[in-house]
Amino acid sequence: MFKNLRVKKYPVQFETRPGSLTSEWLLEDSDSPIILEQINNLPNNIKLRVYRNLLPPGLMIRFNIDPITWKGPDGQLHVGLKADEQTGFVHLWAHKNGSQQDEFFRLEISDNPQRGIDINLIHLNDPEGQRYSTDFDQDGEPTLFGTTRRNLEEERRAMDGGLAPGQIRKNLGASALAFQQIEAFLATLGHRAYFLDPLTYSSAWVFEKRGFAYVRGHKLMDDIQHEFQPGGKLHEALDGSTTFRKSDQWRTVRGRAWAIHDGILENIGEQWDGLRMIKQVGRHAGVDTFPDAEF
Amino acid sequence: MIHQISRSAELTTLSEFRKYIALICSQHPEVDENILYDMQLAVDEACTNIIAHGYKGMNAGSIILSMEINDDYAEINLTDFGHAFEPSRSPAPNLDAGLEDRPTGGFGLFFIYQTMDNIDYTTNVYGNRLTFIKRFNNNV
Image (cartoon, chains in turn brown, purple):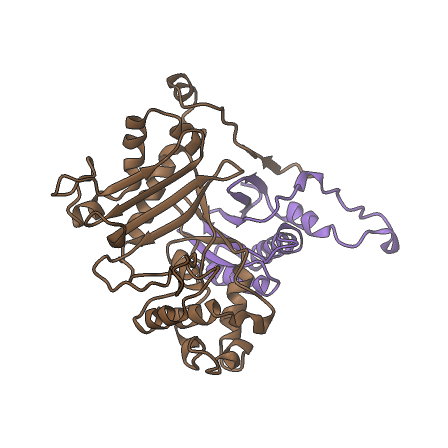
């Protein structure tokens, strides 16, 4: 009866081999995805050549950093790479003047259990912007971007300074460029999509603009949009009870994000947890859960 | 030209997709009412399946509907990121059985198979993609 149905399942789980890449492996098949662990097992100079492609050259030039040698005018390295053997983790960071304080780029990616790629962290900070210490509490303990501890005074200053939760400096405005670069890199490795878990409401909104769809959490984003409208439970909960719940915050992505960071989702029996997004290489999903939004 | 709309996997999305398909087809006089109805029905049934089973047990993710209308056929793609479903394992409903003997449900896929000319289902770690082809003239 189902004569017109064709089912394809290729590949449900990608087969990869332990060890590093070999020329024999590369000659066999140009379609099978290469995982990061395979690259990490290669000699250091090859890793540098490969992971160089994760950094947008235009961004390096903007900060006077040579995109090939990663050195600045002072002759010092301004880019760091950690891609240890036998691991599937890659950390890449770039700073303007040689200290972590003026880091403008940080990317952490990893192999996931399904042999796909997860972006665990991406930060693009304007090193000229004012720094807010929302990443450390008043006792100097790391807050993990406000997820485990909070520095309320710094968060208040950051919010007043125009930042979103999770930011320590204003954005560099280069996320489109960075994602284009990451996507081209992953396509070269043979990956057709990549994943991330958005840390905040505002970052989820930005990722929507960059073409991501939701593996989990699209309904939550719709519920948030609905309940922030006048008459909704989240709109009502913007009652001024804390600095982060002012009545007009429903109007902007940033305002909503701070209220959600402050735990306002309890009013609809939810929390910011478990969202997962996917970007298909070359495709823009067109998701827009807050139409005509002002950031 | 490929048209695309993305919504969360919720029942309210069904009517939005029906309206969207009607809107796109209204720009193509070669798509008559019967063809439009068949396409709406197929999308409705497939999305109901994704909502009920694909995203079962999780905060629902996205469904991406894309469609392209050519001279003599339309192609519709539904992409989701939930649990894969096994269309080939779905038994055909027994249309000869009495009403009281028929299991609840199971007709959705049957309708899709009956009304569409080609159906492809691709699933992998990057998501699930269901593709329908509907020819405007079955004699072609």
